[in-house]
Length: 256
Figure 1 (spheres, rainbow, N blue to C red):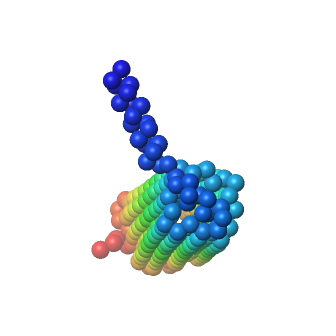
Figure 2: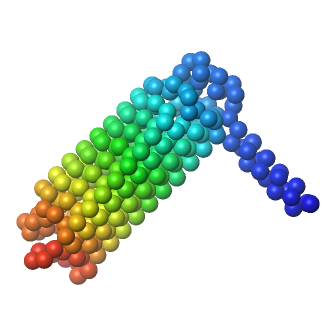
Figure 3: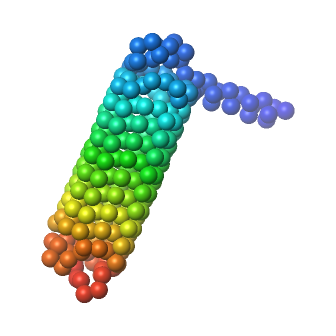
């Protein structure tokens, strides 16, 4: 009996911890803005949040599925574990936003500014991130399978262990990014800037590297078997080691 009461108390405490502020919700409805508000766990599916000002607002575990947040200001907003599946975040400002383990599957984040944001373990499968700014964003272990990142700026982004299988990353900038142990199998990296990228232990099997810039890229222990558009001239600007797997007749110098 005591154990049951303790369990019930824990559930109530957890629910209260995520209870949104009704006054804050009313303010959002009335003005279209709610800076530094508490909307944790709120159901916002039917709200008009286009160009809404939600800076530094707590939206942890909020339900935002299918919501139009295009042009919204979400700088430093806490969206951890929020559901943003199929949400429209085109052009949203999300600098330093907290999005760890957030559901962003099939969301439209085209041209959004996600610089310095925490996207660790986020579900971004089939998300649209074309033209997005992800400079120094933390995407470690995120799911980006079949995502579209064409023309995205991923300069110095942390992509350790990220799943980019079949992702479209054409004309993107990944200079200085860390793709250690990342899965880029069959990804489209054509015309991408991969200068100084760390691909140690990464899978690039059958990836499209047509005209990609590989200057000082590290392919140690990486699997490049079947990679398309890979030339010896471009490989000569990169480096690897004895564990690097290359298409037939191609070689790579050892990293120092």
